[in-house]
Image (cartoon, rainbow, N blue to C red; front, side, top):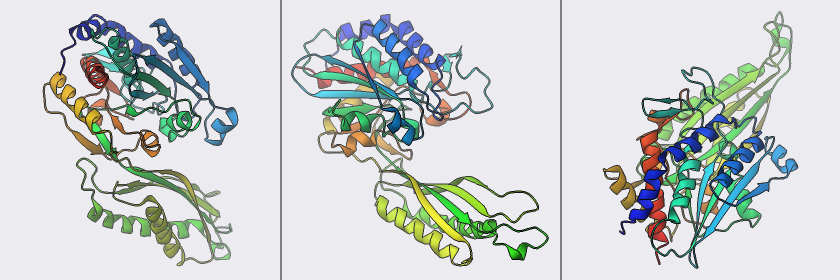
Length: 408
């Protein structure tokens, strides 16, 4: 591996600037939902232009955005061509989950405490906006001739599926990279992850006075039977564990339930939503069919109620694609060097918008700033945080890997 002293020196001199870029993008809320992210995109574009980048602003049509349950989406693309060669995309997402309760710091304050920067999105994945941007800047100071193009994709709907981010950029012909690196969240290099199925189940009965409940059809009673069947069936998923390290077994969670009219009224409608994680070895269509069968069979015990099942999301699992091995190996070597410990490629039980690159035939891996685990980062929890030292180390890893891949 080439040493690239000029690249390393450039990054060492600009660590404070990299940290400040992260702080600036954390200070602008971009919660999704509700998904009104155009303001954050505008500020991020300003910051990138201040670093000398030419920023393309790609506004997703409002009708498309609203159909996906969001308010506004503007995707940003930066392109730097160094010569003829492969195109490598770096994708970080600027949307974040809402902060929730329990914070000891302002979720949008970017407070630095004991070497950690706190704020919603600090780890997932606004840190990668800063890391990828400065890695790209450093390539111009690598001290060697490079062949190829690096694109920075900053998208705004990862938390709701990625269809308006990477998938939209590819479908619209705005970008078609040869390789992609997507936002990470820990020391490890990720080359595989779970898929996910979200279903909404609506149980409809008939309301009645609580003094004569037998004159109605109790939707909650039927829903309870379905829920019990699902929880019982869930126990068998442990036997379907993936063979890919880090993935684990499929999971089922009923995360949302609503319904009823009043305490003294037989509930006429109950709605609940479930999350089924799909391991890479499973067929997503078969997973959905099996789950619908479990629901339908349980509903037969209360035939007077009607059942409607609606798919909300089907995210396919991510698996390594041919053509990506050299990229993965280069990244693991640089991560091992900089982190000072063995860093290999594995899977994670999450799902991300990286799958959209893979669906288009583009080999993709995940790596970015973060501590050793998402638990340490408090990802999607109160007091989300990232170690500033790891932000700088990850930036160096990415920059050196890109220099390796684009070396003449």
